[in-house]
Amino acid sequence: MTIQVKIFHYFFACLLTGASISVALAENYSCKETGDTHIWISPLNPKTDEPIKIMAVSTDAPLSDLTLIDSQDQRISLKYSHRGGPPWSLTGTLERLNEGTYQILAERDNQLTACHTLTIGGANTQKNANTWGLATEAFYSAWVEALFGAPPKENLNFTSLEPVLRNNERNFLYNYLGLNEDNRLALTPDCADLPYTLRAYFAWKVGLPIAFRACGRGTANTPPHCGAANIKTEFTHGINSPVSFRLVNEQLANTIHSGSLRTGLEDESTDLYPIALSREILWPGTVYADPYGHVLVLVKWVPQTAVNPGILLAVDAQPDNSITRKRFWEGTFLFTNVTNAGPGFKTFRPLVRRTSNQFRTLSNDELVDNPGFTPFSLEQDQLSSDDFYTKLAKLINPKGLEIIQAYETTLNALVEQIETRVTSIDNSEAYFRKNPGSIIPMPDGAAIFQSIGPWEDYSTPSRDMRLIIAIKVLKGFPEKIMRHPELFLMNDRNPAETQAKIEQYHARRIKELSIHYTRTDGSLWELSVADVLARKPAYEMTYNPNDCSEIRWGAKPGTEEYSTCRRHAPAQQHAKMEHYRLWFREARRPTP
Image: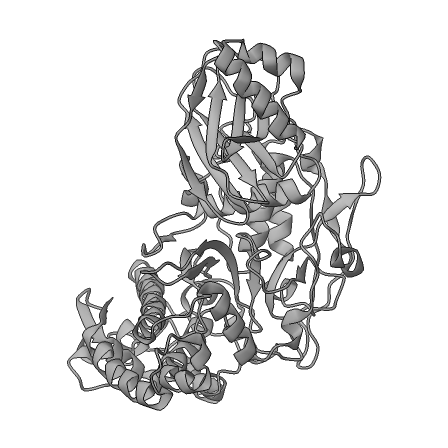
């Protein structure tokens, strides 16, 4: 019997005999966390006149209850929301408490798993974490999952990271330091910066070190290489002001780019390292880097049920700083083994203490069998694209899917991707309404994918290349039935016959679903998914923001749809686009 179980049994016996719970706590054990469950309180120094948030995070199994022991020795069960896992978490809120000392208990099946002493109106009840480890990594994961929580079918999107972090209900660490530090915090990370910004923000609040490196962009045959780690320890020395965080984050943003995440999988001079494809390892907060430079952050696993398919959700940031939640599928998470990038799922390389004031990053060898951190793994390096997607499909839906259910999941993912593109082009149109007559300069060559300024904000070359790939994936779904029947619940049906039926179903469904985009005159125009798919060749030339929205959606001159177009990119830019068109036709992003 573990000491925690013994404590709980004694605790319960005291309650039955009318003995004082506080006496039992004081005389028989120290209220603390010693196992796989840890309790976090927000804000750092709770006061009597403000709500208090509680998050219990477990790495070994789900939790079942959160309980408050008040100053009158009363046991009060708290209302909570459950997330995960792993890791698993319970989050609850106490509206207001009087001054005094309380205990927060986390329990599993009537057994105590962790206890945390909460003091209101007194000294600091919890210290900065100072070092990364299993407990803080699990807390980070649970924080990310809560930050982007919403029903799976909700189309979750934000104009930037700012409204997410300023939402007290979403952000467990909102004004955690008691400085009203989030009220004017400006955070608008783009694609590559998003995972670093989340990590730095969390480190600032909790008191952890962070590290980042200056990296190149690689060549046609070699992935990017990075220099020595820039280790920032400011946050470990106590509460830091928003100014201190802003300075660190600005330095980070000026250093990080897509090459920082596309480093080789075996390279040790990296900010992130590759991990195995396992549900126990791919926690929320895990980073996904595709070979072409796009980056996503995992935020939630939705388990498969008898009625609904499983879903793996992630968020990404766009050049216009918008944040959108997306589901895992082949059209969003691009994967291929190439010589000039190390793609796939990665996690941040941990920092450990070298001395009392110095930290160092762990090497790959140190991370292979280290029980305190996610193991280093080259599994993804051994997989073909087909093997990669097959393995993830089995992780997301281990029981397999009915054919129609699997097709609808793929179709819905494509529609989400199209609707996100609608928002991007609408943002572009808003720019030109504010700046009539403007011409956005177009970069040369591969720079069209990674420029800065208005071209980066409003062009869509990366998004359009992913759309072309996504259309190919949906159209190839019937053939996938023949190639991987083990992914589906076939119910003894013939794969060839099933393929023919899904082809008929596909032809009908793409006509039934539609999207609307805004034309230059402000009117809405409807396109069926069938229309979008039929225009796939047009999307090789539709990423230039200087063209009207009608052109960017593939409208043909002389049609009613095209009649409202009032803006065209310069002929010189069109000539360059024709020269680059092969990249899109072959879905092959060039090397800088």
